[in-house]
Length: 442
Image (cartoon, rainbow, N blue to C red; front, side):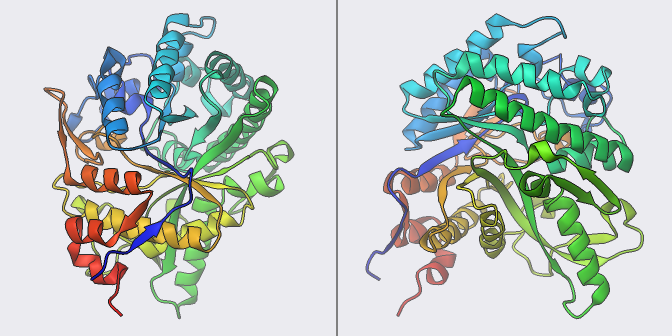
C-alpha cells in the first residue's frame, strides 16, 4: 500500500494535558487532601509526591513533551497554593508557576492554563464552597491574581474543568468533595459556579484584552440501548440534558434547566471565546427505576466492546465525532482539551489514539473549526478517587521511585505531532489491526 496521510492545518496545537493536584504532589491545603485523609480513595491510596512537579520534575516532563514534538501543553494552577488562607497570597508559589510558564516558552510549548481543575483550598470548603454566594468574588479575586501574574506568558485560559462532573460527583453522588448528595445544593452550586466563570471571564479580559477564555466541557455520547423503547429514549434524553448540557446551555442562553430545576443566569450568556471539549467514551442507556440519582439511566457498554482495564472506557471513535458535532453547535472555535484511555499495558491506547485522531481529522476536513488536541495525559498521575489504579500516561510512572518509562504510544503521538497528521505507516507500525479500517485498500 502506498503511504497516505491525513494532514492537519498549519499551526494546529498538539499537546498533552495535566492538572495540578494530580502531578504536583505534597499539597496539604486543598479539598482533595482532606478527602484522602477521610479515607475516600480506592484501596487507601495516597497522592504523596504524585509526579513531583512541585519538587521540580516538571522540567524533565516538559522536556519529554518537547522531545515528543508537541507544541503546546495544558496544565492547571493550584488555588490552595496561591491563596493558602483567605487573607494571604503566596507570591513564592506564583513565582514557581511563572517559572513553569517560562519553562514552557523556552521549549516552544504554548500554554493552556486551567484555573480550577476539581481542587480548592480547604478554607473555601469550610466557607460553604459554591453554595456560598461569596464564592463568586472569591474565585474572581483568585483569577485576577493568577492572570495578572502569568499574562506575560499565557493567552489561553480555561476557567473550570468539567464543571458538570464536578457538580454531579461532588454534590449529587457525593463521591468527590465536598461529599454532598443534594439536588438543591447541586443547583445552587452550579449557578454560583456559572456566575463565577462569567465574572472571571470579564476580569480576565479587563486585564488581558487579547486573552481567549473558555471552559473544558466533559461530553459523554449516549445512545438508547433499544432505539424502539420510549423509556430508553426518555432516559437517554434526560441524561444527555443533565450530564452534557447542564453547564453548556446557560453559556448559550443564560438559562439553567436540569430536570425540574430552572434558574436564570443571564451574566453567563456568551462568556466563551472557544469551546473546550473533553471526550473519552460513549455509553448505551437503559431505563432503570433504581437509578434515581442518575435520572433513571443505567449506563453500560455493549457486549464485545473494545474496553480499557476495568471496563472504564470503551474505544468508541465515532462517539468522538458526534461529540465534536455537538460542540460545533456553540458556533465557537473548538479545542480538544482532553482525550485518552487508561491502559497500563499500552495495548489498547495505540488503536484508541489512531482511531480518535482519524475522527478528529474527519471533523477538520468538514471545516469544523478545531484548533488543537490535548491528549490525556503526558505521564501517569493520581486519578482522583481511583488513586493509582488507572494509567493514562504516554509515559508510565512508578510513583514510588519516580521513574518514568516511555510507552510505545508516546512514539506514535510524537510521530503524529511531527507530521501534523496521521499516516498509514504510523498505523501499520503501532496499530496494524485497524490499518484497513482507517486506510482501506481501493
